[in-house]
View (cartoon, rainbow, N blue to C red):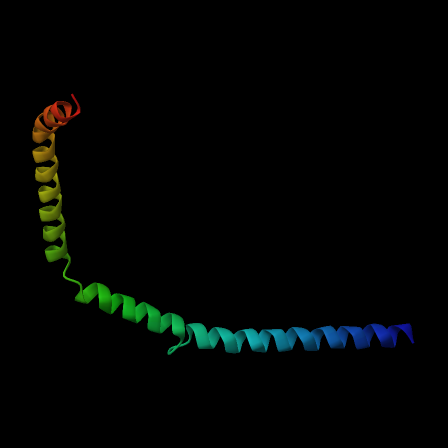
Amino acid sequence: MAVEKSYARLGFFILIAVVVILVTAVLLDGLVGTQGALIKFTEEARAAVKDADFPAMTQSTRDAADSSRLAAEDLQRSLPAIRDSSNRCVN
């Protein structure tokens, strides 16, 4: 009788394991399969990178950095005059 219960438990655990494997396979196929979400995401990301105009973006980034540097230099040159003006107003 104890042996029969052991076999029944073993059969139950095997059944559960098979169900888990099947469910996992179905879920993974939906995620990774030929038309899965992960494949679609990867294809869309590749297309976005391919369509992006990186040279133009790089040039505009350089231009913005140059403009920021020039603005900072202008501010640095005008700081003494701003300090003098504010000191005259305070005194």
